[in-house]
Length: 451
Ligand code: UDX
Image 1: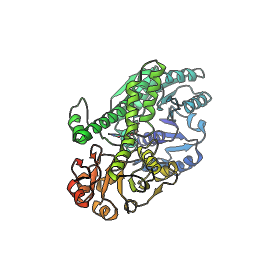
Image 2: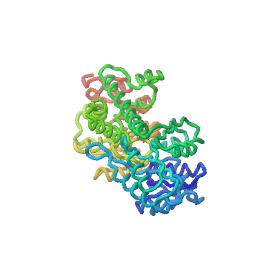
Image 3: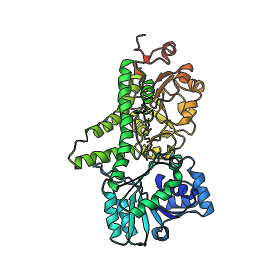
Image 4: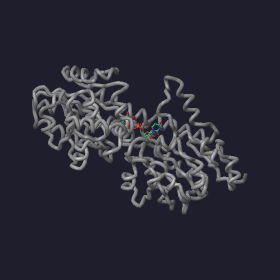
């Protein structure tokens, strides 16, 4: 099938390369000339595991094309997917200017039997509005086909979806899109557009709610000597609760969970309904950043003049994306208090240095640790789970690790002589002596300095 994808970002380029892998011909439209030439060269304008090989393969075979000319992609396409961004406005409502621009452009390239799948996350009612606008210019079969791709696992998420949702009032769109997705062998839910649009927002906001829930529990664990990771495991064994999205830490970031939660708040307010639950999810999330900085302050005695090695800048492991990254936010707060930060991230340094003027990034994680008064882990990169803590112990000035992501490193770090402080570790004044540090290393409580 001839497919056009409008927008070659995390979603658009991923689905383009994956549809090609499934045997289709795809032309994606990218308006940014630099990104366009990168893609035409078979490269990625961002980091996403497994995607570069797929893009290179598709471009080399001529099955994946990228163009800046909208009509080139859309005129021959039997199916057009719209995958442009809908970022938050200041009010929390999504900015639909890109979607509206694509709709106008589509009206100017009429085609008898075109199917349009909107992958962008859009407010309830938007698909119907777009369908009306397109049908006014000619036959159009429009559906909302929300993406459920997570950054860092986007390719795997495409080929192994938990479900596909098709929100449409057109039987043609329902039939054609169902057949397109059928080889993925997952549940395909064909429903109305409003239900599909709401399902997308509700799904992401629920994931955000789970993260804020376990972070609220972590704060209680800190006061009561419970271990939040063990609590999460115990809860997650109940299939009604589930084990996923229960990792406590510095909270959620990225371009989706915060945006979609804000969008539901805006929708509730438009409907004159209280957004209390969704508001609290964001408030608890924001509070995790303060909580981490306060724990660092208590553990170090003071922040001004201290040197902290920050491991991780991206909003999550496996991506170069720093949008609404808790790490970037926390680094800004630490630097504002006079902390000298040296950071390392496998993929997100460029974006972080643009976001934090003056940020010092080191190409090597052990170089970042030299002379540090503390190591702060702020992104859950898998490679941080297998660090050489003995080597780090010899490099740091103080053996203190503040783990903002609840990685399984407490035993290894403690065995190397570090004081480990995780998402539910109570923090008193740091033990004065290395002897006390060894004594307290690895226990859930770090007692006050009068030991
Ligand atoms: C999310 C949804 O998962 C995906 O289905 C949707 O299509 C797009 O939005 P993404 O934002 O890329 O994907 O990443 P995700 O894995 O959801 O993580 C979001 C944030 O939550 C990250 O900052 C992550 O570190 C944080 N998180 C996630 C936690 O803090 N704890 C967890 O247990 C899980």
